[in-house]
Length: 219
Image (cartoon, rainbow, N blue to C red):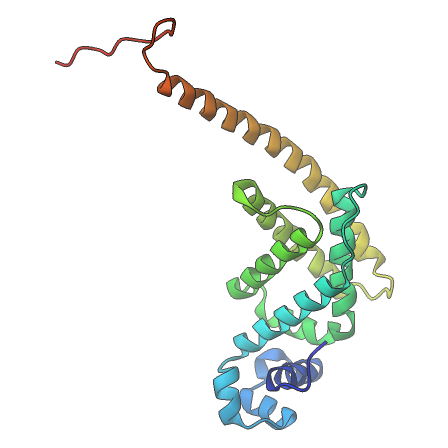
């Protein structure tokens, strides 16, 4: 998953290796430099902090998942498509679980980690055929991010190679979210329709045959 022909890939791979051996908080950039064989001066320019390395990791995970996702079948339920995409992500992360657990236990509930997760979920939704445009799209992204965070904590403790607990929790959460999104979509449609009707009334010109309310005389 990591391109070991690049300094960025080597740095990320070394960071993950070290995270599997000890707590993330105890790992220094100097340790990563020694393990990767890349000088600290080069690391200073490529990854001046461990947060930058986490960005590399997140991007690598995103790209690996997106490369594995098949074109969405129009006949497939969106819920099933999302479930397949997120489970693919957990499959990709599975070999690195020990490292990711070390990172997560050190950072949760770090706002930066949460933001990375939300940014990734935007692409997971798009890959599943779900639009993330507009207000409703942003709400879907936030909702998916919240679901992922919850299921992610289950995955961290799920020792079953088949990830049965993880899949069951994801399925339950998606079914609940599906009902909420349908209700929200109906509410937003009614709200937008009301705004449209109000706009139409305001734009009615005072032509013959049109109803209008005379303006109150100015005082």
